[in-house]
Amino acid sequence: MPEKLLTSRTELDAALEAVLLAARRHLRLFDGSLASFKLENPQRIELLGNFLSQPGARLTLVLQDPEPCRRQHARLMALFARHSPAFEFLQAPDSLANLKDALVLADDNHAVIQFHRDQPRGKHITEDAKACHPYLERFTAILAEGCIPLGNTHLGL
Image (cartoon, rainbow, N blue to C red; front, side, top):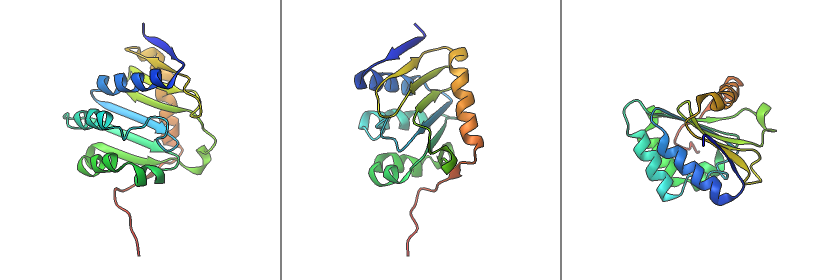
């Protein structure tokens, strides 16, 4: 079954882990502040670390508000520091502030789509490049809006 409707937080979490496990070349994530996907979970950090350790792996993370992630996701920020050549961390421009969905795309054929970040309803796509294509286009359009690259350190006075 290549597409499955998700109706609970448990299903959403299971789909996220399945997509993280399936990733081989490129993971693309878009979210408000990572509250939807809870990547700080040790098991998910391990999955991301294993993915980033693969030759040629690439992670692109786009957040509308990166500050909560930077403050509350120490493990993820450590991964970013350790794998920075393969880990692109971006802030979405203010022009995208009205977007309320969230996406995780693995390669070109696996995805978790959360229709609205305040609800656990979504879709899990498995091994279906055609079904993932509109979401890859959406992610590309988000990047084309002019996302701002973020470093892994805070500057202070």
